[in-house]
Image 1 (cartoon, rainbow, N blue to C red):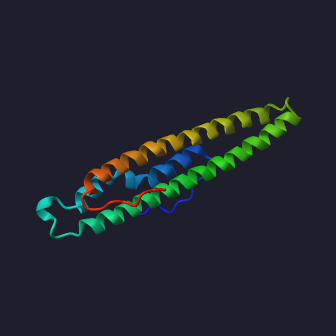
Image 2: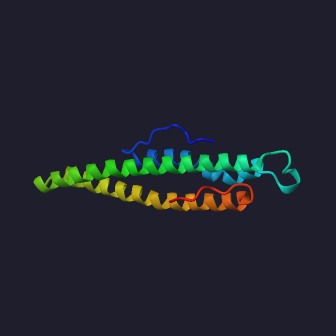
Length: 144
């Protein structure tokens, strides 16, 4: 259940979103994963639920971390482009091509930053569902 090994395209926002959507697959299917791998009380003797929950938790954390890293990398790259375009505009404020490109990049940067908020909601939802189903089988390490 690892995240797909696709690289995030920071230049094209719609491709950026497509890759994030694919990377969020584990979170989108968390309920299904829990239903198919964590046994109910009557089947608890046949499957090691604590091991299953631990592996699922590790997969979730790995996916959350890789998405967070990818989003922040794109934000940093786009911020750098915005900074360069601002310098160009300061030198040549009459160049409409630079002004339009700057606005486009600023909008993309704003949308990428909003993906961090989406990411927080997705992560919280997944962890809530995980803890509801796995709390009796596995307790994740506390985050410092």
